[in-house]
Image (cartoon, rainbow over all chains, first blue to last red; front, side, top):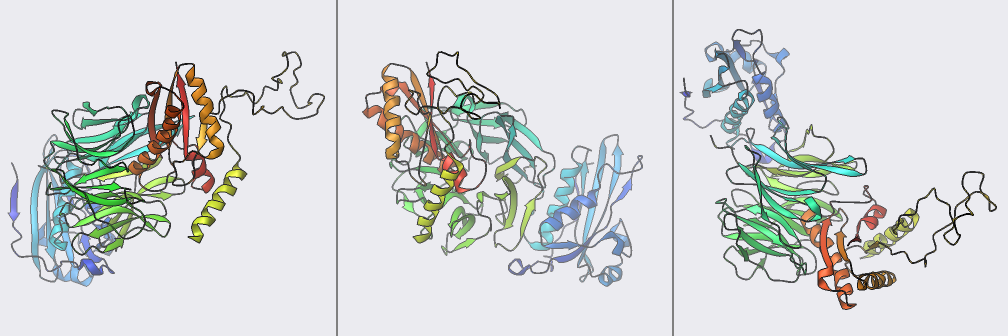
Length: 425
Length: 172
């Protein structure tokens, strides 16, 4: 039956939430979805998934089912007076319709209660296997209509876990939905795994593995599980990060003499081009989204600071000056901000710097926070923090106002989260 | 500045309290109370002790066993003066052939890939000392595990002091 766009939201929503002042999350109602099918229950509680997504964003306060005066499943039955009475600013209704043995239609409509009008309505095909991601897409559309910011509920996160096993440890590279569901271990090893990085089409991950007690950089295709080594030179092979066109990696190579420098590695030919030659530690390269610069950590001034160099080569220029320790640069996908690990009075915390204004904003409050990674909408970051002896994941809005723990089902010491790009349909 | 001095002092005290871990080869079997100098017939064991009562004999620090790990100060890759003899003895050992892999490590503070760099810097400091003392470059390889393979799993200064290290791993 294909995709049918029921109503296009031509007018911009009035419910745009003031990002600077999210003291009070907006009350919204997600009515339990209707079910038209043979089995007693629908394959997935779609309203639950949408409710959890919106709640977790910190910008919305979903209204409890027990407070709802009506539970319509079709937009025509929505009574705006009822919803106004319970204080909902927006209401979502929808249903799941079975079309075949493993074929369903998920439809939803979002209404502005004050304006008494539909903001968006959408109907999409789904199977049992894709129902959850369809629900996340619905949440993304709702979020974007209400906030003006693209939702990231349909994206994924990759991270590394380490679990103690007898005398040794078991390291796992895991990919999951951004809400922690659908965890898949894509690589497991008794030797450390480090520095996962997404390809721009989100089909591959590059990472460092210490199999055989030496470091190598691998690129692995997620769908097939096939992987190939792209760099296994003597000494350090580390810190891979994809170029915006996905054809190159910026990597750190140390060589026999252990002088860490930044190189660009062409994935097909495996040819490397050296970008820095300083005898200091140069590492943790990251491409700017426009492909023009590579940002990296260097301790050439004494302690680690962030520098950038033209992707074509040239002399590096220093970018950070505030504080004695700034490392692990990551650019926001819109190119406006730089995230880093910053020593804040003895604590290692996540900070972002506006590249235009150069002001530094500390976003986290732990003592050993690390590995910041921007969501593809540039509005949220994920990073690792400590809870007791183990690492756990947290997200924070780029303005620092909303901080959330990310539930991980993996257990163990969780570290090095990296947020995927937007999925491509 | 003052706080840094305090930090060092704390680290030093914590390290002493934690005690130096045993890192000699062959790893002495803690249940074996054979006195190294004896022919092996004068053994004692068990809680009833021998002629000296409960206890066990200690390793002779000059007994010719190589120390397989050395430790570094915070943010430093300088081999401590007291450890330079240890490196010299490894140089002598390697003079008779064999290969060594120097494994550099860092404590958990700060960024992971930068810590790989710090661990490598420590391994390279030891490598340079070995090269100067005549060990051939092809006998030595280095690897840095950064903060990925801690010995101390906590987040105290004592854990950090144990984790800032270079380990000597021999192969033939």
